[in-house]
Length: 363
Image (cartoon, rainbow, N blue to C red; front, side, top):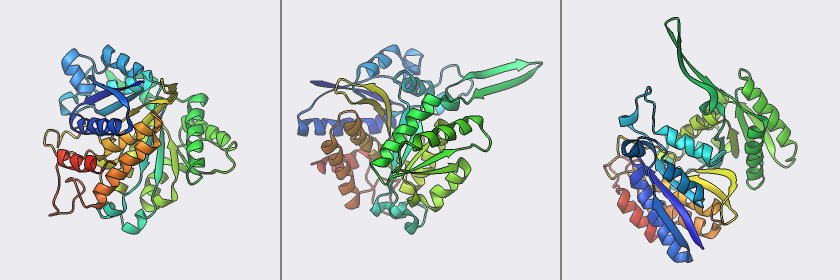
């Protein structure tokens, strides 16, 4: 069976780290006898420049047919005009919507040898193992009406935050299932003291919790959650929240691991691929990082760990996923660092060099 992977390098450092992730998958395919078909397609700013749209029809069609999608990043200063009719982020949001990817999983696990890379005290980072489950296709990023209007010479902008019971239920149910396989705790984050959508969110999460008697439920307002993530991160297990809150909280959580470059993600939906597994889209969380794009120093670990999640969730290859994670672990334990992880004066490797070490550790 040929396994199809649609590769979307995108913009900025996305093109650099995705190339490394593809090489990791090629090595795994050789080791495990997999027939992987990996083809690259345009998305984001690169697609706007080439064909005038952030999500070309052939890209979407390829992603709909693929068993999994590997994404780099989208966006950059070149396309930052907020008044533009076409923006790179429309490609990313369109993919999530069209593929039905309703949940974004972001593991946050500080490596024991990188605790000093975080500005937090070492003792706060001991035993931190968080899985953030972010609702991905609802909320303020997709709600309607949305746009701008002018009335009596006064310009107005509007975004609508909207959630339905089924949207909340499916992501809450996933969070509780994942927690039941981990430490048995779900923290739901909302703003129920102000927002009606959050009151619905809390109501539905409470109802779902009744079906999981072995899982503890903690509920936090988002402002409190941002504080507790830094003051007591080890108390969290699975954290489930809305689209916008999840976007913010997961970027904040990168502080725990020392660099955003280390964090992978998996966006999953209800649709199954030809293998009977969840079709998903996998990407590092760091974005296009235009300040270092083209310098060859981007940290590829987040992209590489995203391939491990791809192997686990969309291909059902747990052993192969763990082998990729071990290769990264061995590389870090041996003291190899990219510039974003290094102490002052410490020797660093560029993107290609650390990729070569990780591939060498892939057993």
